[in-house]
Amino acid sequence: MDNSWDICWIDRPEELKKISKELLNEDLLSVDTETFGWQTGNEELCLVQIGIPSRELVALIDPLTTKDLTLLSGVIENETPELVAHNASFEARQFRRYGLKMNGIIDTLKLARELRPDLPDHTLKTCCKALLGVEISKTEQTSNWSKRPLSDQQIKYAALDAEIAIKLYWELEDLQEKIDVDESLSVPELMRELRETVKARYQLTRSISEELAVLNGREDLIRAVIREKLIDGEPAYDGEYGKCKVTKARQTEIDPEKVRRELPEIAELVIDEYVDKKHLAEVAKEYGIDKKELDKVTDIIGYQHRMRISLKDVI
Image (cartoon, rainbow, N blue to C red; front, side, top):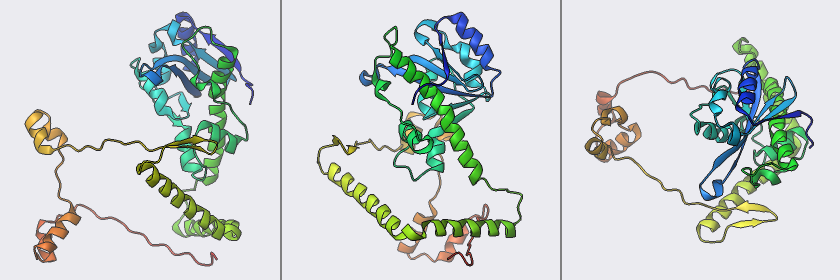
């Protein structure tokens, strides 16, 4: 996909100050960043891209020369304008380097996971291909973004990411509108809507339901077998079919007694003691304690509503 929005380059503090004020008048922006050095543990923010849909413009901000990104604080830290980003946690981490906390975030990665769980993955490249029908290249992602001047290819790549994020959001927003339910409807009206929705889904998938169930089950089993083989020592794979590997994550737990001993000044603030009901019942049974005795140590703090629904004439 080619760039269709205009591009402006911001590399002086006075230019950043000017556009920051202008951006405060916008309702919706996209935000993307490019970094360099993460491979060596020396990650550096090298470029900030802000897409401005109302002007069909992408502002490329050079933090290596503007230095003081706090000029963007009004844009980044307020609830408006809303900020569209794909995997927004990455951008949030970059802005934290400058003491800025992102607010008003619309994360298209989370939206895509919620609205299109059927996709094989939810990378920006996959989402664009599946939802927008466009191919985007990510070859420049790992290029040297700290080198100046940036190449024409780098500039086009960076600007396109900010532009495409907005277009992806609009597509997901349209999908969300189709899903939304009128909450003012009565229960009988909602039951009708539910039955018609389930019925329509069944009619749509009836001819492929068995094949779909087989494929879903086979996918889950293959993933499980691959995982076990990698855990057992088979090498990670990176080839024509994709990539797979397993990593060992350290699992830890906090000992409340050690917290009391080592951090007495905050112990009572962070330790939340409770008795697990299931464990209590198991131990009581083991010791032959009657279930009625547990009522003596049980307080009712509220009620949980459990709902059962059965629909007529779906199949």
